[in-house]
Image (cartoon, rainbow, N blue to C red):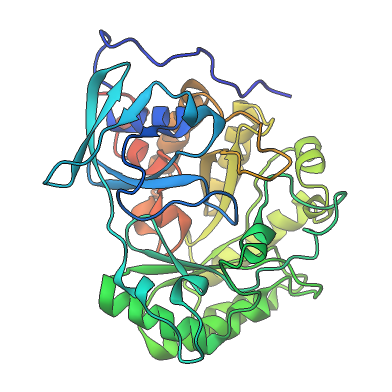
Length: 387
């Protein structure tokens, strides 16, 4: 297993050159931050379906998710001061100001409830600054088994805590999506799902949900599920209103997949690659993506090798630093160091530019949002280098 722990206990000294935006985001996502005013901005939460244990911060015009409830964050050299009257906070590293951040405000749709009496935040929540996200099915065939569950997953915690409902109906999703667009200017939506005990692996649930939302409001939607057994589902998802599709690898080598997510690893890499090849012609180049968690044991070279293959197929590899979630088997696993992430995101951003692919061209979903990784900031710098 590759050591994914920070390569040094502290970030660069205050006397070093200023960090570029992408390197600062890397630092904050690896080390986390200590908030002197935890109540600022959209409320954070511990545990539950991700991104969790984070706080949304806006840095240089980009809203990103930064760990605030992890063990690393409690000891982080980075501190975010209480916002001033202008809503701006100072980020300090070892007592020296290194940047300024703002906090997205609590969305207005959070105050409402559905026609059948369910609070809107139990149906869908705000991610980043302008993304509506929902787990349509909050249960998974793999979650209840110690021998099958993904070691990083907390999908059941949100349900157990009463923060959500097990199955969101198409009507509820359509109602909340419409309100989120009209009241808070939401720009796109992410629909993910736990894996049901059906061969479509959640595609059917996503299709009926997307169809209802599109009938209520014109909102780009990303659907996320494991590869269905039948490739015909890709056309059905597209016809139902899914604009982009996510099928998430999380880890890229068989050994790490088997150790970290033993149940999901029963769907082999070969099936994922075949599914990617079938989905790209349906959704378009760059509109199929996969989520890769860096720091679970895959070496940077292995991640980049997989990314090169994916980009060549027209699949956008969204690589994010692993952040442990409270209450999971990996809650004490360290996040990757900033240098570890830089070794991946710099070359990957150059790879994407050469292929003519960009997060900005993705119609909807995690890659377009980009809040959980510095990748989109790296895309704006030649070679991912600091200015």
